Length: 116
Image (cartoon, rainbow, N blue to C red):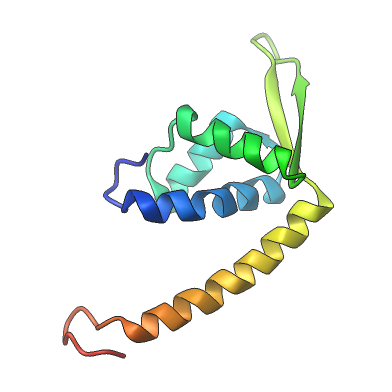
């Protein structure tokens, strides 16, 4: 999935939310989404991983897509977050922040090994 050493199960769980966040920030296409995710530190996300996520988001009504002609090149499929997608992103982001704070409280600090 990614080349940076993040556990695959972490990426699998969070990738749809991160993809939705990128699409909610601006209408964009697959390659640009992958580049944005890599720039954010998630590693290289290959098309075989990304496009099924985008398809599921579209099936769930969280994004829409439309083909556009390319300037001197092939057309691209652009993705846009729906109002439902933006609401889902806000709800899930709030839940994720709460979840990670609670999990962090259980984990030991790397330097002392003690629970926080």
